[in-house]
Image (cartoon, rainbow, N blue to C red; front, side, top):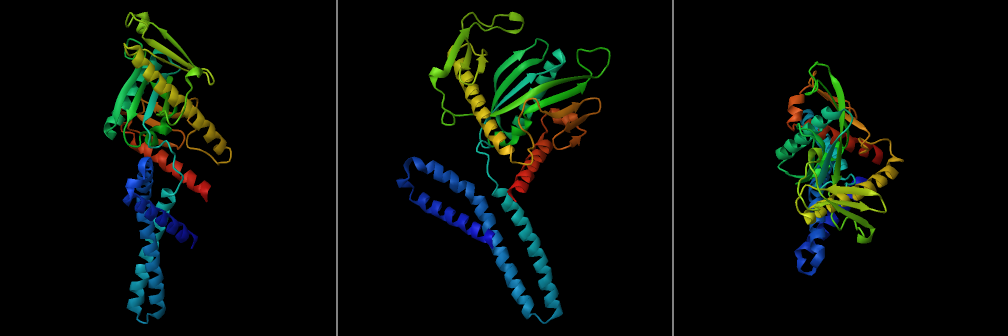
Length: 355
């Protein structure tokens, strides 16, 4: 069987890595890379060994069935054979998922950006609610949620807000949140009781390290200016705000929340690297998508991904046609049903494309 040969190759590679790790004194800088590869292969090898053992047991039962004369023995063996076939099918499915190409960014931290869209003050209030929803979800996951910048409207809304979210597999869980989020509700600023529709956009970027993307300082234009709060209120009296433009791509990032120009520059560079890295990933994804049947989400900010209908307590994800009627729980960060369903759909699409 070709799958057995493939699994034997994976097990052999795992064993070779294990030998190298036992002689780690000679690895130097390669140690971390080999250790990670060994760790990544470990669960696949466990599945592979279980699969091979089950296939061998199935062959043994087939041999015993050929020799069995007693009806009771045959029935028992046939029952065991059915159980083993079900186990093998389940292991095959797990192996197919485990062997799918990994998104190299899945294990990265993420930069979350939420911006008010159409709908004026109501859109800004909804953007603030979305930002709080992701903060609560992050707390549930045990992640660190570090607010990077807030542009407030003065009555609790956000024109835009960004945060660095750190933890295990952050980008893997949040990457499908990018896109347009629409809200239907009676605005907090509306006394007539009419349902309005407004929107906010969400961008989830994998945090890019300097090793992920090299930026030439000569390609940057850096402007400093005096930061200001809502309504033009001065935040401080020094030129601490920073605007960095990457000239080749036109990507611009402004940061003014810190009183220190150096800290604002560090934050702005972190966001700039991540935006450029995300744009390069998007280009590569688009090239691959041209030959693919479809994607769960393109990450395009203009794509409408979800609608939150407060009067009906309904939340609908338009990409996978999933609707729930527990909007209060969703808004306090109970997003697992949506996130797990989006991940499962992505896996199913990748599996159908690999067949």
